[in-house]
Length: 203
Image (cartoon, rainbow, N blue to C red):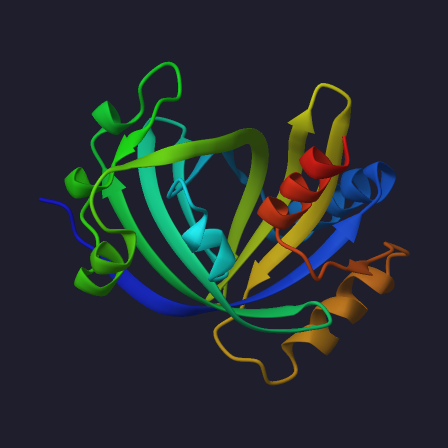
């Protein structure tokens, strides 16, 4: 049986250079021990008229190691490195992940009633995909993710994402944690999906 979870995600996002990504990996392993390795493939879908994207909502299927995760996100607020977004998630059977991307039958997905009404009948169109290698640590209620994202054959970006339980003092804490080791952070105000689309449209 599939179970939907819904919550507001609070996340810090910083871009890194390749060199600082390597240094951050060493620092996090030194502080928190070995990371969990996740190999993620991401596929994105929308209605033919692009209504989800126009509404600031994304629908993603993610193959993560041996699992398949459905995620729907809608942006609420961004300030510098801090992102607030509504997130709905559900683990699915791997039959939802065919070898080659194809249109997705929205009626077969376990969606909230309001979103199902928004989508209407018919299939969802495949928009594009990219791969991400994630090193992940859980520490004191926070999820620390160090990402290397391959958007295309000659396009890789590096970043760190930290899911925080509360906003109070956490951004300053993590900025100091990395800056004290000379690791440069660039506030990342756009999601991976937004950067992917921008790159596709600018190609």
